[in-house]
Image 1 (cartoon, rainbow, N blue to C red):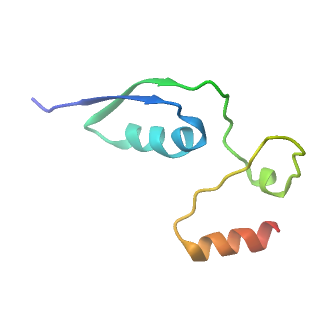
Image 2: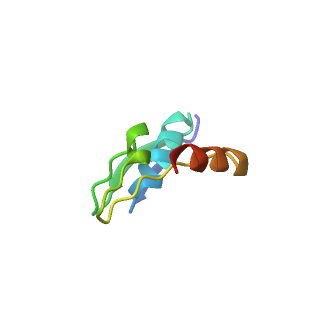
Length: 77
């Protein structure tokens, strides 16, 4: 019998919804059974990186390294 890890993500925010939860769902030995956050989060779209929100809102992109980060900044600055 294969052991299944039952995972709960608390305070998930942007990294939880964009990174942790998708990776948990890809893992055959893990099951995401609950999530909890007090701040609603929406994943950023491509147009968000060119938007001035004028509020406490951020568009965050997770990149694989410095070169990708520099290219993203150069494209959207």
